[in-house]
Length: 175
Image (tube, rainbow, N blue to C red; front, side):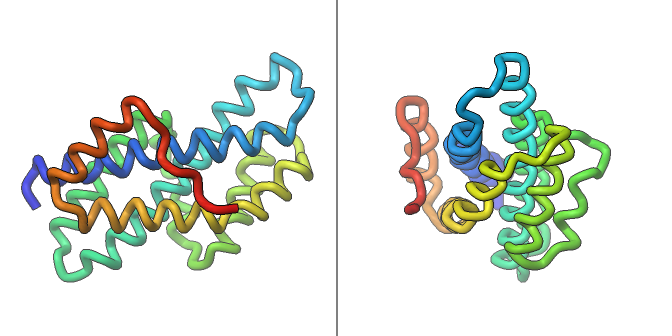
């Protein structure tokens, strides 16, 4: 994979997942119908950061699986994705998200995410956790779909999709 191809494939993943994070975040925030204005920015930042972190780990796992025989390509693409996600989602550079790398099932991922969100908010909010558990599978499937598209679609098609995203949202996953 050339540097330009790596950059475009990583950008496609970042943009697709950024929009997915925003959509999922909005669903989760809706579980706080009367959140005080002072709490809302913390809630938005925490959800965006935690969802971005999890989505990046899902991408990383799938890239390693799909490009197993092309280790250098997998490494380059994952590093490019890591840089975009770290900057775009303002992820900590302290290795705190490495816990996801130790997990192997979606149930473990969602339990870890629930724990991290609860800690970030300083409280447990059952409606948010219920929505998270009930809606995580379609979002996981969407991230897997975006990753496969990033790996398989021709560069011209990826480039045109990246340009199109300036004006529209990707389709939300089924409920």
